[in-house]
Amino acid sequence: MNYDVRDGGPSLLSRAWPSGIRNIARRFGILHIVHISNGRLFFRIILISSATALLVWAPLFLSSAKSPQQPASGAAVIVQQSGSPITTPPYPTIPAPAPQRTGLNIVVIDPAHGGTDPGARGAQGIRESDLVLDLTVQVRRALEAQGFQVLQTRSGNENPSFDDRSTLANAQRGAVFVTLHIASTGLPGTARVYTMPESAATVPTGGVLSWDHAQAPYVTLSRKFGDAVQGQLAQRFKGSPNNAQSAAIRQLRTTGAPAIAVEICSVSVQDRGDLDRMMPGVADAIARGLATFRPSYVLPGEPGSQP
Ligand SMILES: [Zn+2]
Image (tube, rainbow, N blue to C red; front, side, top):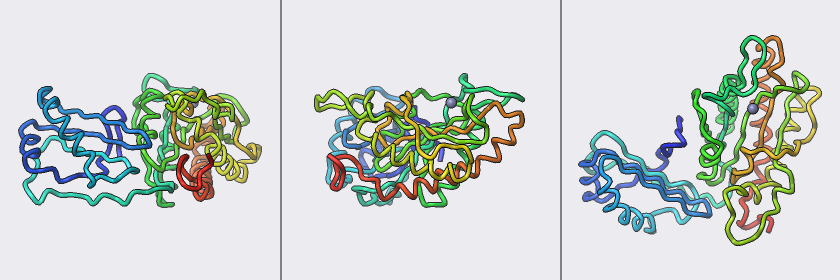
């Protein structure tokens, strides 16, 4: 599933809007609404073709979002309709999934770098930004085989911002985030997992968690997740550490979900085939580590979670 973090996302739920709204939407052509609840409420409406219509209809959608038909909380609710005329009744609907109070459902994979940022560069024109895309394909396959839903921060040679990438993860409920890198240093043939240091869990309290401290409530969970994956990597790649390392990583800091960085060593290999051959093992290690971690996953603020 392609996902452009700048334009919203995949349609997870289509609703049957009242016929009056459908008629208006048909006249204006494109209607695109994103309503996401993740402990906090985000609301974004993009109505192309008419700024006036945006003003007129935004309050209606806001009130509609409060209706009891919406899941009380939980999974992202994304309504998207674009381009072609909206059909007359029966308008196709997908039943709202039962709210998942707990449980890990979604994995956001982040192939780091991209676009004008090639990341680390090695012999034979090896570019980190290309390699992590190839790795993503394999990780995705391994995760989907385990029944996880996978979203990607990029699927081509784009370069979303750190915030764009975090936004995709922060818009989900029941998600983990995995950013993928190829190191420029380190022992070739090994792989390391990084999570934010424990100190990142301490934030000034003021009732509101700033974007910059989004990782704070998840530091302990991230460490558990990281250790589970690192343990799997250590079994497959001799010389890899047994436990996840701590590092203040920009991409993890703004991510409000258990989040890890996985790094393969390294672009310094003479033959990129050495890295390609590691990829299935890395993908399998991530999928198995996640399956091990899954029972520990309880969202902060929910029954069973740590205060
Ligand atoms: Zn990198």
